[in-house]
Image 1 (tube, helix red, strand yellow):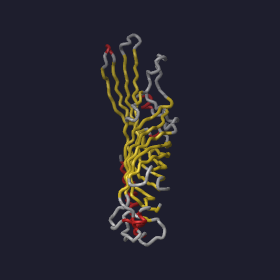
Image 2 (cartoon, helix red, strand yellow; image 1 turned 45 degrees about the horizontal axis):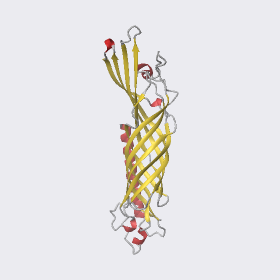
Image 3 (tube, helix red, strand yellow; image 1 turned 90 degrees about the horizontal axis):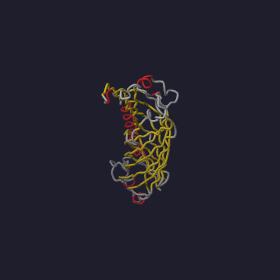
Image 4 (cartoon, one colour; image 1 turned 180 degrees about the vertical axis):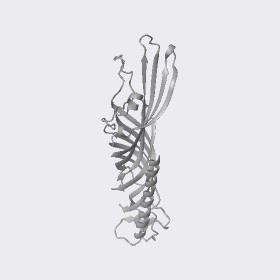
Length: 321
């Protein structure tokens, strides 16, 4: 939680700093320019010229910077299964199988900066560095029977949840279907993440099946740091769609210095598809508490995620198209 607060505070300070830079640029931009580019976030207090309304018609945001946040609906694809327990009845292959949570049922979160550069009236390049947490889990269950009395057994059930955090660096190419304040869009891109933290939450219940009934013997919960279990990086591709809404005016059409200029609100959904195994194969069996205490060893996993987000961007620079 301390790491998350520090990252959020840093991002807010960066956003404030960018706004201050834009304000300074707006003041510097009071002098007449021969070209069509204008820097402004708060308007710069320019007076309207006779041709300002005409110039504003083709003027649109070119550089934008803001903040975004939302939820992650996580899921993992097990590409190779592993276990530390082998059933005596080899035909019973499901005895030690993991039962993964329902796809996209675990909710994580993300927050970060969002920036874009317009390449044309309909196409923009986006860069959205941020801090994200992804959650997934599974259940395992093991039974030990007495050969003389099959009705007497001990059952161990583990409910294991994972929380893995990354500093993500996604880059996207976005296409807007129309010009104007309200713009539906689609986007494609890729991402690279640096793993910052990983934990396992293990809930274990031990039951006694003597006399044909189940009686709980013990119930424990343990949080285990597993940074070494996951590799330091995560890479993949993403695609999504959404809707953006521009509110406000360009500098040449503003009459006061307190106007924020064009502010863009964005609502979107992305699907992220991890391209490789995020588990470190060299450290899979290293934690003795997990392997011999709760009989858990992590499969090879590829990360999948549905990202739903809301963002707000301020315009740093305008361009006549």
